[in-house]
Image (cartoon, rainbow, N blue to C red; front, side, top):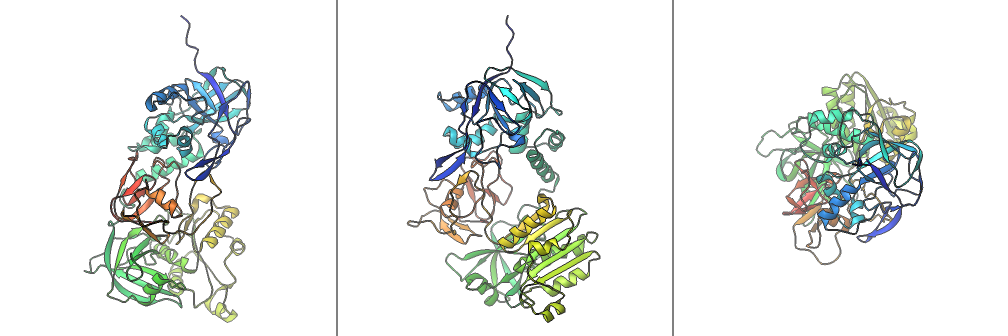
Length: 579
């Protein structure tokens, strides 16, 4: 009897990025790959003749070569009722006979032709494989059926060709299969010990190492802190209104019956529904400026020129008034540790930083605290007295204040420096590069300072930012996109539940033609974040401030309480989203 031939390379597939029409937009993608004839040169970052349209999610040293198995081809042909598959159909570079996902392990090494490879990670979930196959739910199917395929890095460059034998030259430590690694990231019921085991595998790509590290942190934490203290909106009574500067007023909110309020973390925000401003009532989010554990929540609101909502809050709201308020939310919070803390803000961006400064006084007195703030001058510098008193209570503090439109006498009296807080002035301060940095202010300011800190040597993972406006979208692969101001959808009004995008100041009824909240957001030009568009990767997770949704299709792993997967969510009641 002739022994089995063993794993074999059936096809080498390459393709350069191309622009593909998709749902009225254009996607730049290299997922269309086709077999080559004869030898193909494998290089450290790619195969000759191959390319990726989205290098943030594909390609590079850790994802140089994508592998998929002919056995999975047969499986999907039967499952989908298809007979039109050809090599390269799943976007893979190497179509192989053998090397199943439930046997190949992270760190395994293989020789094919003159080249040698090491397995680094499973395939990342990506909507473009669904685009290639004409099956939008394909990313979820690959994960749910445990057939993702995998990436390899190139250990030795060389030529490969269809028909080459595949020889295993080394085994990865830990015996973590590709299918197991994929399930650890994307499916519920994770074992913390399995996460620790995965992180000890040197060959696992840094991206997946970081994802497992985040999951391990979450698994080891109290499951309750991320859950909102209450669902939807509840009535809170305005307890005090205090003028802080020429343009800023602080509003303290308490329970109408005097009951204690749930604790909020420093840096979190409240979402407020403001009556008398519009129909439906306008919704805005404001960072808490009060100390964690304070008996009342305090928001500090800047009156914007022509701002109806900010004008009402700073000019018309009085003690005793009732406001509808959603529970404190947000991930812009201080991390534990012993390294220095950089609190950097401009203008009204001081509000969450002030709450963090309160926490530093209470819990982080042994850490170096850097307080760096920019304002126009003393009349616009809100909450400066409170900040200065807190800084005086810290033993290891560094304070730098910049006023851009103040007189020399004002600066001398206020202990402020002249000019704006910019990347150049920041560089001159010699901030510690081992610090955890927290930035808040206008979008351009935050982007400039974040870039400056990175250039100075801070780890980007330790730079945390908060914006009061809509967050930057994540739309992998889309090209030629025009940035437009968020707006209501064109055409006649729909009849579905009201969907409010709080950060974008858009409220509109959900149309029957929309399949998900994400589709509605895109019609309204509301910035959103997504990747696989099937809910597997949780990129599209967004805080659900009020209301209820259902999912179609059901996600493989439900989002945490108070969150929603907008790519497959449909509202069943009026909803308010932090978008």
